[in-house]
Amino acid sequence: MRSMVLDHTVTAAMDAAEGAVDGLVQAVRAGDLRLADHDWLTAQLQATRALAARLEWFSLQVVREVDNRGSYVDDGALSPAAWLRHRARMSPGEAGATVRTARALAAGRLDATSDALAEGEIDGAHARLIARHTADAPAGAVALIESEALKASRAADPSVVAGLMRQFDHALDPDRADEAAVRRYERRGVSLATTLDGMVAGTLLLEPVAGATVLTALSAVSPLVAGDGRSAPQRNADALTAICAQFLASPDAPRSGGGHAHLIVTVDAETLASSPGSQGSPGATLGWVGAVNGTTAQRVGCDADVTVVAVGGPDGIREICRTRRFFTTAQRIAMMARDGDRCAAPYCDRPAIWSDAHHVIPWAQGGKTDIDNGALPCAAHHTMLHEGHWSLTRTADGRYLMTHVDGRVIGPEPHPPGHSRPPPRQPT
Image (tube, rainbow, N blue to C red; front, side):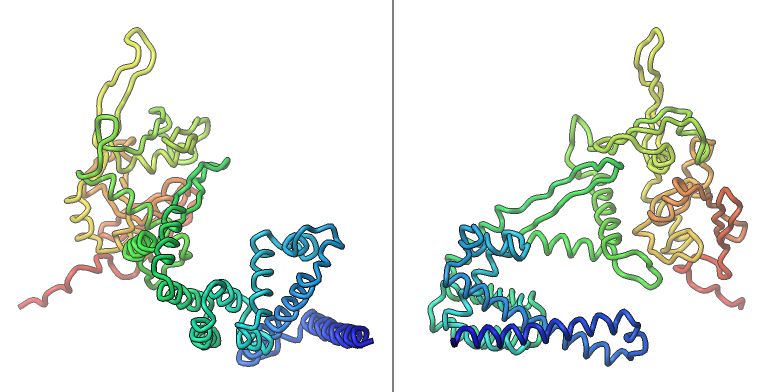
């Protein structure tokens, strides 16, 4: 009889909760949130998160009860984790973590954590971290760390609690913590592959020191500046590209195949000399990636060595000549002194460290690789100048215009470039 009364009480409470959530959904669909102010919305978010934590506590109690009974076999499951995968549509990792957390909270060593979750004071992610890192710890050590972990959980996100629990692991058993660090190091890796649409995608997993090194370098190369509309992933992508390009351009870069490693683009002379968007171009081939647009090859060729090769005929394949198309460091510095430490495109304030060297008059159309014919657009605008079919011109007063093939014009800016120049001296 007691079980039946309890079941009736829980069922009634669940029905009431479901009805309340139905009411919330209908209210939102009716547009009730549109008139609310920010402070009210913030309070509702916090209340919702607390309710979700309390519901997660209830679900953990259910899992623990099924685990104790072994009733998961009634559904043909061989373990409570397998039952969760079937009935709750959880991933294997999530199901295993849920079972371990449910067992830890019911074991009597983490009563304060269980109570905090039941009251909505902490999130389920906090509880899972505390449960995982105290699973094999002595009861006395658990009692010491639990209060500190809960204090952090009530005030911060799970990453802060994770750091605290890692410190606990090391203090409790330094040798074991070091073994875990070695295992993390052995998991390191970078995997890259070319997608079917020509992008390069991959995954990156680094141990802490290597990860911090990479993050520091990316942040230094691509700082957030006013007016920069790129997302954080886009800034990181541009920074990584700049770091690799600078490394390959360094005389200290390792040699490969008898010379410095090079980014190799193979393109026919007609495509290299054609106007943007020209019809009939077969495009080009980029090392490691494969086929790319002819305009992409022209963008790469703006700042590169070009080797002209004759293919076919009585002499077979032979090199005809080699021409330097890249701008030297001294030329780049001179262009920065002229245009300022900024992108050459009108209204773009990205610094020159993000810039590519660009031939204002295309090299294949007779443009020289000199300061007068050079400019430093950022990588994004350099792409627009080639694949986007824009052109860049410098006016007599040193300002820049960007013109699209359809006639659209950007610029010139009302103030002259050269932000790094000192103000002119007053006549004496």
